[in-house]
Amino acid sequence: MQSFGKILKSLRNESGLSQFELARSLGVAQTTIANYETDKRFPNHLLLIHMAETFDTSLDFLLGRTPEKKSRLRIYEGMTRGELDPVYQEVADKYLGYLLENQKYRALALVSRELDKGLDPRIFYDRVFMNTLRRVGELWERNEINVAREHYITNVTQTAIAGLYTYLEERVACDRVAVTMAVNGDPHTMGAKMMSDLMEFEGWNTFYLGGDVPTDHLIDILVELKARVLVLTITLPQYMDTLKNTIYAVKKEARLKKLKIIVGGKALDVKGFSWQELGADGYGSSFEEAIRLIEEIR
Image 1 (cartoon, rainbow, N blue to C red):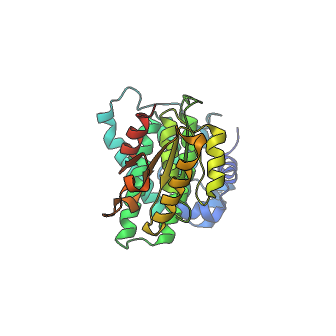
Image 2: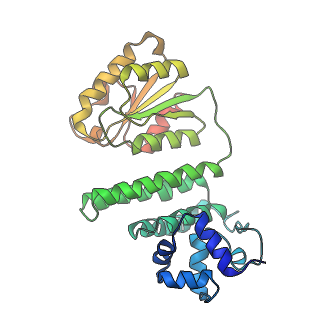
Image 3: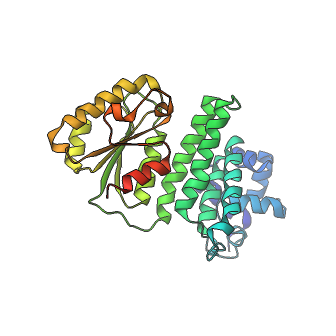
């Protein structure tokens, strides 16, 4: 049986953490971690719990009592949505708190640990990830965090969302193809990415293109994929003409007569802009409304 120190060092190396980074995450000195890894010292029960959370493992594995890294206990199974609402809120609060404290690894470990316990990944996406990004946007608007912090949290959340797919059963209908992207020039692509994820959860075969795709190339891939829906997002109003021109060019393509274009984003919430004048087939003022509109296209 491996010693606690060897197990700790192995977990730290697998996670790509230095002794200094782990020490900072746990709130101890680097020399303390070094002493743990050489079995010269042993942590108290609170630090053991923090270590298990950080490495997304069980205490039994950390202590060398079992070869199974993860606990298989699914404590949330059988609970109703109403019973779980406070759980999702608590997870969302902890997740954002970790990221505001630069605790990326603890935030990611929290996500996988709670999903392993039986939380629904689709509800998790909305109640934790989307809720976090909304709150981050509000913090930025109030100047409580700067744009660098906003980008950091957004990028970590994109990493967390990618891991969410391992908890979803395969239910994609290959003939229901949708393409999502941000309007050319607009640097804010997260909305298009989230629409892609949400549509994937609803059974669409989605292709997320990011942004800055030449219009002729966009048309080529829409034709190639036989796409049924194109979602275009816009955050900054100065790109409204670009959005209008993109829609016009796509609509003019004879091979895309059956394609439906849905638009959304903060820029369209500004009074004076009309999605009908843009030539789109629909407008979602929220992710939920956009998904509803798209589902009607089935």
